[in-house]
Length: 103
Image (cartoon, rainbow, N blue to C red):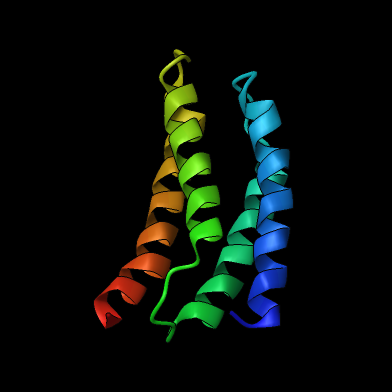
């Protein structure tokens, strides 16, 4: 893994905390999610031709995705959660789907 990708993964990990803490109170941190999407765009550019999936990145994204889905099940109005669940799912497919197809 190159240094740029390692730095982006560290940034994603820090952003994840900013997303997960409010999420436990059923709150969406829109600013942190926008930062995450920007970091994921950069990640995709760096991983587009990689043949291996970074486990740490996969774990962080799985945690974020699963917590978004889980917490959305505990609110009456899911309209704040659904767009982010779909967008994160799309990024996961984009980043890891391409990597898996190259193997």
